[in-house]
Image (tube, rainbow, N blue to C red; front, side, top):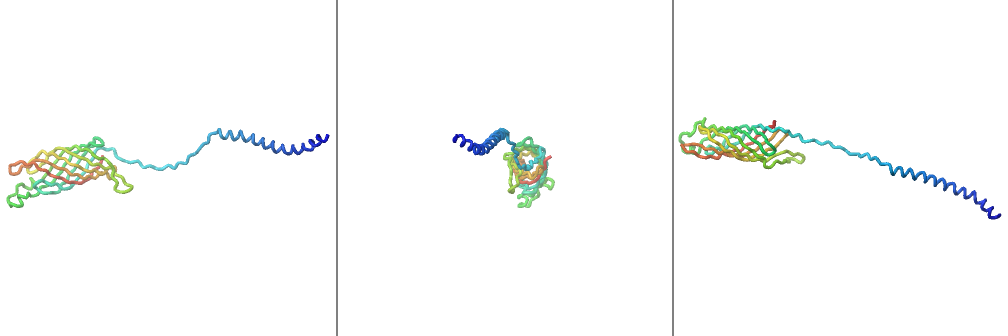
Length: 225
């Protein structure tokens, strides 16, 4: 009887202890499926990528190049004199191009004429020099030039050779020319040139043919179209 009475006395205490424990168990049981659901659902990530603007290079695809040049032409035995002219080129590919050129200059008195005091060997009209030629060029080193830190320009070092005709000393002479040049593209349509070439042709003075080498140094500009 005493044991049964003690159990009855302890029952309310056990009930007060079990109720919070039961509530805690129910809360944990309900939270577990919710956590499992969150783990199974894919997480959507919204990337914040800062897009930057890119300026594409605007390089014309025209293959024709037309321009003017001027410089100095050392006519053998007739001094170094100004020369000027025009050139038209067609770019077959990235490396190969064909060029037609027309140039004019005028020879000075020869050293013989100056020293001897004799009559002039050529008239003023015969001292006029006009040449035209057709040449084949090859871009050896197409590359980029960097004149400033943030500036880059297309450029090329090329070699060129061809044949043509030169009118000088009262006659027309078959001419072979060869040389090298540097092309600098200032914009997408404008190019600057620096060229050195040798024009080889025969000159008949005093009844004797002589093969002459006539060095030419020019600069100029061309436009693409």
